[in-house]
Image (cartoon, rainbow, N blue to C red):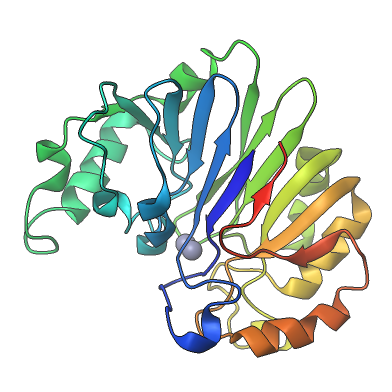
Amino acid sequence: MIINHGVRGSTPNPSQNFLFFGGNTPCVEIKTQKYQLIFDCGSGFSKVNFSNDLETILFISHFHHDHIQGLPFNNYDTNLNKKITLTSAHSDKNNTYKKLSTYYSNPYFPVNFIDILDKFKFLDFDQVVNNFEDLNINSIDLNHPGNCSGYSITSDKKKFCYLLDNEYEEEQEQKLIDFCNLSDTVIWDGMFLDHELLEKKGWGHSSIEQGVTLANKIEVKNFLISHHAPTREDKEIKSLEKILFNKKVKFASENEVIEF
Ligand SMILES: [Zn+2]
Ligand SMILES: [Zn+2]
């Protein structure tokens, strides 16, 4: 099961005209029989319920604020008697710890959050992925200021790809096709429209149209365009659906549940 807890890019927007698709920043949860895998902890992370019965691993794509800002705001059930593994293909465990500790300490945050929360176990990405018995987890370097990591999860039945915060460029197309071909679900960064990209070159995001083009070049069942611009109202997103000429492409919406 895949749950999309946040689909908004850059900053949360809980205004009334944004609630159909959702105002929380990125967080995607996958539950399998053994694992609870979480991708990014934007503001949507507050809705994740941790389970003592599953092993939980949080994968961070990169450390821009919209992908980590929800970390302190989960209620972290006090009955939780396990550690949450936190990892990133983007940086080793020491640097990951350092970056989060800096962000969540004075003068940016009122308490040294990472130090008071002993629920996390920081591990290197390679260490984490080698431990899975029944899942194959890979990462891909994305084109983003300061870099970003995308992820794929493959079980014996399903494949899921998480590709947020990527500025599409022609040279990476084959790499992207190889990475996400034969997927059941792909989550793609469609923050901009082609005409908006003219002014937003170098901001590290792709267009909705580029997502549709990529979706047409791969075999995929659901291609979900996410990381919606924080100013893009529901009515505009709905009106853009007519350019999505392929039934397998649609806009991601918060709280949607997808089979894995
Ligand atoms: Zn982002
Ligand atoms: Zn970013």
